[in-house]
Image (cartoon, rainbow over all chains, first blue to last red; front, side, top):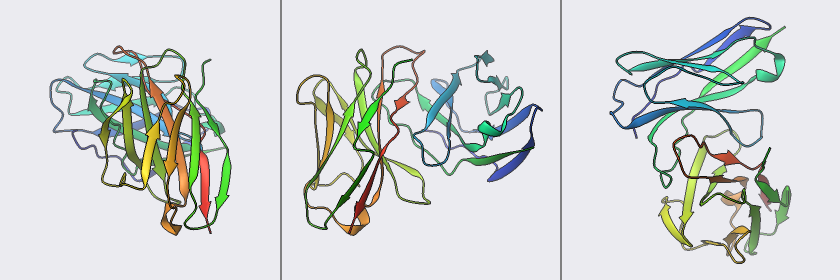
Length: 111
Length: 114
């Protein structure tokens, strides 16, 4: 699986949009971009994933650049409960494949 | 919303003892996984399981570890002779087929080896 690069940590203001960047310059054509988050000591939680097109669900939006070398996860109105470690993972969308977690981005939402 | 259920939430065991961690994956999922997270460290892949057999395992998953799906609903991780360094959160996950499915993780079992 391609490697990803994320900030180690970032702060976001409550009520504002939180934009979480991820670089994946070595992504290959059949690899998807997945986002998960882990709220303290809980199991990782699936947020969203995409291949080429931008995606939106009830939790977040995923913006993938045209060259697919980077992406941004957008939490439209950050709340205190969004404080978590956010993981950007790229992998082939094969059911057998493992998810390889990096260190992630510790996002703290500040009141 | 369907959940992956793990029991127990916390297990304390003596070094050298066997432990079995239990998971009930989402009922129509076909792919099952165990991950672990040592305190303060990354979430690490242990093993994946599909069609009643191990499909992939990491270097962590040595002969002390085994997995089983004994009755078609439960998915268990057994550690035969626990070591102090096995102390960690153990997460079970399951996944359905199709491009739209992400992994669903359980809330974990905190294993403490003393």
